[in-house]
Image (cartoon, rainbow, N blue to C red; front, side, top):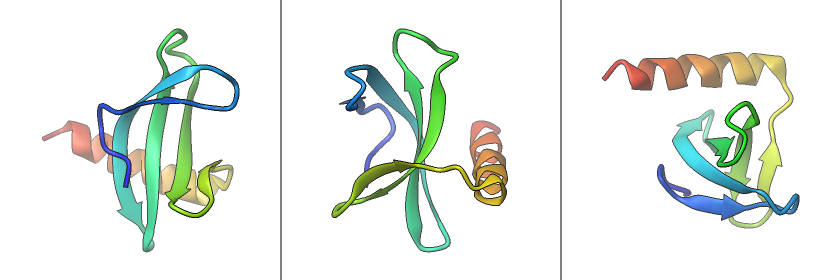
Length: 74
């Protein structure tokens, strides 16, 4: 599992900060923000075999955003 605060360099050669990580429906997800362009964000599914894959499913994104917002209230 990737942890909040980790910095990753993706295949676009940009550095991203992990700002949120969670498990949803038995899968691991992370919320990434580009360190040089804070408007460049993405949710990705993560596993040790396939690495990161950007989430494009609107239902999953909606639920992940709710989890992220809820985590910020604490």
